Amino acid sequence: MRAGNDVRAAVSGILAVAAGVSVGELVALPISPYASPYQAVAAFLVDFAPAFAREWAIDTFGTADKPALMVGVGASLVVLAVVAGIVQARRPPWGVAVVVLFAGVGVIAAVTRPTMQPSYLVPPLVAGLVAAAVLVVLCRGARTTASDGQWSRRQFLVASGLIAAASAGAALVARQISRAGDVLAERRGLTLPEPTTVADPIPAGAGLQVDGATPFLTDNADFYRIDTALQVPRLSTQDWQLRIHGMVDDELTLRWDDLMAMDSIEQIITLTCVSNEVGGDLAGNARWIGVPMREILDRVGVRGDADMLLSTSVDGWTSGTPLSAVTDGRDAILAVGMNGEPLPLEHGYPVRQVIPGLYGYVSACKWVVDWEITRFDRAQAYWTERGWGVRAPIKTASRIDRPAPLSVQPAGRVVVAGTAWAQHRGISAVEVRVDDGPWQPAQLADQYSIDTWRLWSFDWDATPGQHTLYCRATDGAGRVQPEQRVAPIPDGATGWHSRVLRVDG
Ligand SMILES: Nc1nc2c(c(=O)[nH]1)N[C@H]1C(S)=C(S)[C@@H](COP(=O)(O)O)O[C@H]1N2
Ligand SMILES: [Mo]
Image 1: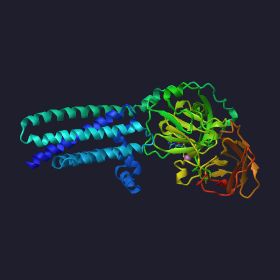
Image 2: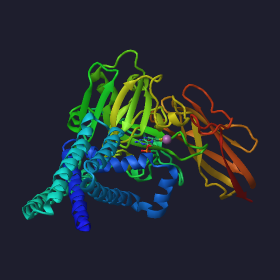
Image 3: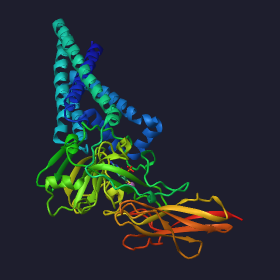
Image 4: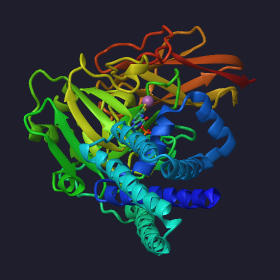
């Protein structure tokens, strides 16, 4: 008889856990997509998995690592449910204890979510309560049924009722997930706000008419992408919110419609990554539309002793920006548009920061959902916790873009062209040196603004042989790029870019 009882107990356990999970997901739906206990536990496992486990998962499942994880969590839940049912039938109330333990994992996972709100605790707690209650009721029934057929039928009815509830919950969850899949469709249909201030027109002389030169504006498809996201977040405008708290007079939570109700501006700004080696290509120049960040800070009333904006992305990444860079009059934007389109998903849809003059890791938070106004002596951000510089203004850089490295050129006139940037200071000169010769001035394209890169070219009278070309820029303050080679870590590389070419006789 024992085996039969065990099967019944196992089924009771599965129904109990299924009911708990579905009700938990159901309760989470109106709170936030990030309040789902199931998703929270999966995300928690990813965040806290040791490196070897993560590598093993990526090696084994490749790009299917995320679905594999979800299946893994599901399978563990089934095993837990069976164990809880059997334990509860044999030694009550220890089965309930197993369920409570698992609900505890859900609570811990919820607490560690970067977007965590106290309401995130409700779904795992409710899930635990429901699962425990169902387990107690069904297992009591299971023990009585051996001698009483009536109980059995009733139990069956209860069980099927629960299955119905569980599937209803699952259906709702599925709808929620499909809504996340709709983010791409939503983006396609999204209308950008009409900026009250448009960007100055680009002078014809800002670009270069030479093959292989970098275009003044970077297409979205060619724009460099740097982030820690394993999976590009899919955050809809409906789910987006920006919670502003910390050292402020009045906390504020902005929703998409609130943001759209504010005046927006259009501005062309060059973004740069601190990880660029000398001559690196992790820089791009785009036309952004968004709301000035300063206007939002004005609404909450920033306390005088605060000096840092700690921004958190929906995936938990953080950046720490000096508040002065947001309030000193430069065009720090909470951007929603990039080159005339809504932000591409991988560039921060629906909302990201763009702040001229600072490397991306201390300024350009993508998928931003939380602003804490704090102090540099109280808080740290993702990369500064890992040894990168706390304050990271962009260092002056210049790069040779053409001719291609190690290419063979005909003797005579060769057009050398490149890019130079020193955002928020501007570029006042670029010089080129051939081998050990003197520095010669390059021709500068028109400067669009001090917040954008500046293209340059140099007419080189090439003589046969192998040559090394060097370039160096001077910023708007008159400071020449130093020769000394410094690695990107902790706050940006320095040194002159060079390129070796052969010239045929
Ligand atoms: N959420 C999030 N935002 C982020 C990052 C990240 O890892 N996560 N990386 C930053 C870094 S280091 C850079 S250089 C810029 C790059 O922006 P892009 O990918 O749009 O070019 O984004 C910044 N914003
Ligand atoms: Mo970066």
